[in-house]
Amino acid sequence: MNYSEQLNSVKMYLSEQEGRRKLFVEEKEKLEREKTELSAKMDNLLKARSVVQIVAEQTQKKLEYHISNLVSMALASVFPEPYIFNLRFVQKRNKTEVELVFTKNGNETDDILNSGGGGVADIASIALRISLWSIKKTRPTLILDEPLKFLHSPEYQEKASQMLKEVSQKLGLQIIMVSDQRNILEYADKVISVVNKNGTSMIENNEEQKNIKIFRRKLKK
Image 1 (cartoon, helix red, strand yellow):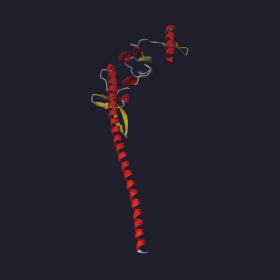
Image 2 (tube, helix red, strand yellow):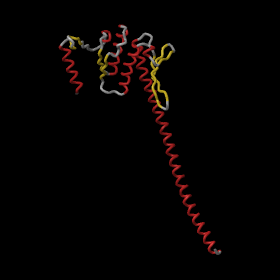
Image 3 (spheres, one colour):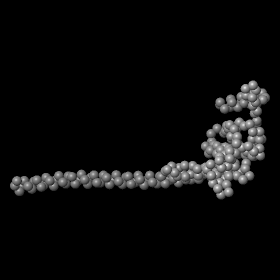
Image 4 (cartoon, one colour):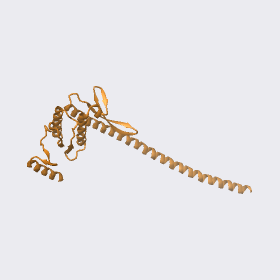
C-alpha cells in the first residue's frame, strides 16, 4: 500500500470515528435532557407527596379530635369515672393504621371489652357509629338492634338514653332502636311495644301499626 492509499485509509478511519463521536455526543445530550426532565419530575413528585402528607396529617388530626371528643363525651355522660378515648393514626408496615386507645387513671388499653366491660364497649361502639355518620352524612336515620345489651345498670341505661336523645337532637339524627331494656327507652320520643302472641310478634295497639306503615312508605320513597 503506497502513501496515498494509507492516507486515504486514515482519512476514512477518522471520518468513521468522527461520525461515531457525533452519535455519542447526540446520545449524551439526549440522555442529559432526559435526566433533567426526570429530575424535574422527581422534584414535582416529592413536592406533591409532601403536600399530600401535610393534608393527610391535618385530616387525621381533625378526625382524631372529632371522633375522640364525641366518644369521650358519650362515655363521660354515662359513667362516673369514664375512660378517655383516643383515636390514633400510626405507621406500621409502610401503611397507616388506626388504634383505638382507652385511658383511665394513666393506664391505656386497646382491649376495652376485657378491660372495661361490655357496657363501656357498647357506649363506645354506638358513639363511634354516630361520629362516623356525622363525618360523612347519609340518610339521617340510624337503625340499631340491641346496641346496649351489655349495659345492665338501670342508672347507666337511663343516662345512656338521655345521651342518645341529646345527640339525636344536636345532630338531627333519627335513632330507631330495638331493645328489651325499659330504662334505655326512658328518653325515647316514641316507644312501639311488640309482644309475642302464640309465636307471632304483634304490635300492642292499632295506632302504632298505622305509624309503622307510614314510616315504611317514607323509607321506600
